[in-house]
Image (cartoon, rainbow, N blue to C red; front, side, top):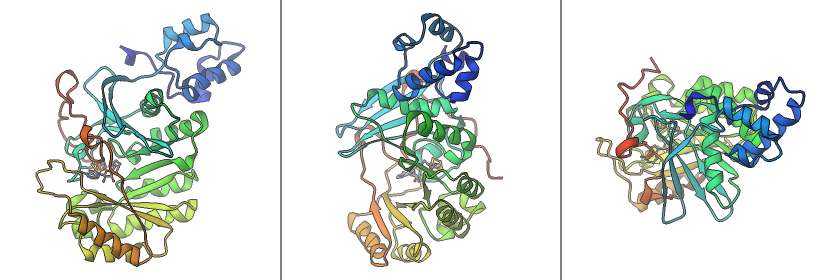
Length: 358
Ligand code: SAH
Ligand code: SF4
C-alpha cells in the first residue's frame, strides 16, 4: 500500500535534496524532480524522462510519488468536480474543482473530519479523525490540476477540517503551493472558525495570503449556540484578531456569514455586523445555509431576507458579496463535505469528538 512508503509530494526542495544527498548531482536532480512533481503535477516516475533511469528506479524503491488514491469522482451539471480521496483506509476526505469563466479554483481539505463541532456543518457533525500531511494537502491540489483543462490558479481551504488546527502542515503546504507550484499567495485563501492565537501567529508570518473568518453572527449569545469555539474566543476577541491580521499584512479580510433563517438573518445582526466591521478593509461574504440534516431544524432564508440583510450592510458602506453556489447536485457545497459514502469507502464514525478547546 502506498502509505507504507513516504511520498515525494509534500517534500520541500530541501527535503528532496536531502533524499538525494548521496548523489553529486543532488542539486540539479532535486530541482528537476520538484518541477515534475509540483509544476507539471506529474504522478508517474516513468514520465520524468530527464531523470536517469537508475535514479527513477531508486526513487520508486523508497518513495511513492504522492499519497492519495481516488475512491470516487463525481461531476456536477455545472462543471464542478468532486474527488473523494484516501490513503487506502477508511479515512476519506474530499476536494472540489471549481471552474469559473475567468479562473479555475479549488477547495481542499486540511483534516479528515473536524473537531470544532459547529452545529450547522456536516463535517463537524461527523467528528474528527486526524490532520492531513503536507503531501495530502498539496496532493489534493495536484490531483485536481491533473483533471482540469485549465490552470488551477486559486486554492481555498474550505473543505473538511479547520486549517488553523493543523497549523504546521498548513504553513508547509502554503509555502509549497507558492514556492514550488508557483501560485500567488494572494490566490490562497484560508478560512478559519476563529482560533485567536493561530490568527495572531499567522499575522506574524507575513505571508500575503487571504484570511477569511467564519463569523456567522456578531452576537455572542447566538454564536455561542452555533459554534462551540465562541465560548473560548468570543466575537470581540476574534474580530479583534482579524483586524490585527489586516493591519499586519495589509490584506483585506473576509467575513464569512452564514444566513440561517430566523437565527442569523435578522436585521439586528446585520446592523451590528456593519457596526463592528466599519472602517476595516474587508468583505462580508453571505452564504445562505446549505441544507444538512443537523437535527437543529435549520433552514435557508427566503431570497427576500437575504436581499434585506445585504442591503443593510451595503447602505452602511460595507463591501458585501454573496457566494455563488455550485455543485449542488453532487453535494459539493460548503458544509456538505462529510466524506459520507456508501460501501467500501464509507467513512467510519470516529469514536468521539476531541475536546480540543478544553
Ligand atoms: N473550518 C473552516 C473551513 C472549512 S468550512 C471554517 O469553518 O471556516 C468552510 C465554510 O463552510 C465555513 O465558512 C463554514 O462555516 C461553512 N459552512 C459549514 N456548514 C455550512 C452549511 N451547512 N451551509 C453553508 N455553509 C456552511
Ligand atoms: Fe469544522 Fe469549519 Fe465545519 Fe466548523 S464549519 S465544524 S470549523 S469544518
